[in-house]
Image 1 (cartoon, rainbow, N blue to C red):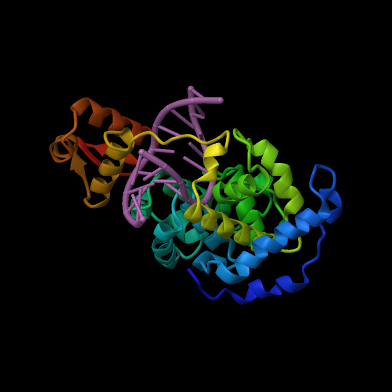
Image 2: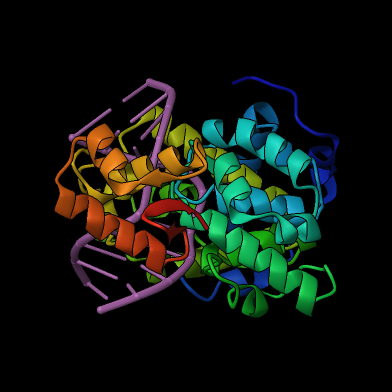
Length: 297
DNA sequence: ATCCCGGCCT
DNA sequence: AGGCCCGGAT
């Protein structure tokens, strides 16, 4: 956990307190803002994580990392990220790569529709934006697989724009620091605090610090996010369609084509369940059926 | 069992 | 607002 941090993190000495005047409107004083920033940055100086996608300003690399990191733990992304950007070095490369090749590389990350989204994003960036990823949140959210959190993160990390957003680590920090004895906390309540405490002089570093602090809180305490109004338990994986879809795509990524009976034999699930999942995957553009055999699209 | 630097569809 | 989409590490 203890590790050196990148050179850019040392620039924090002379950051301005540009958010201070606005902070006094809603229940948090400028001195409270300053104290909070000090605490977060103090932890970051000691324990900040040095992650591969934090070493770059390349919008393509940051996009890949942000999509991979959606509901996927850092440790699992690290290995995949470096290999992925080596094999597909830029937007045009990913845009012209067959989906089956991308999906093969995606194996193990989960939520495979993200691979389709990345390819579509790459195609549109290549065709419509001359290979340059837009920097504005309002534009980024028009791409498939990019919602408000991912768009804001990309905008802050790749373009140094002081966007305001919440993801799971940020949420945990604010619940812990500002809503100690409250339950059912909505993101709408948290968002103004995110805005008021944001270090607008270096949003990239600030959000890195905030997230690292949130990771620490989770390791050290119970998960405060259970007090979020948006918290919900995940449905069981065993026996789910997610499991079946994963098995199908894994089988097709490892072979040129597989028939439905072959899959039924291998997976040991009901024919109805297999068929409905195959149909759904075909509808979503993952797979194709040719002469009774299925292949990746 | 629980969670992950969420998005999308209904 | 609530359900679903993946898979692995703890």
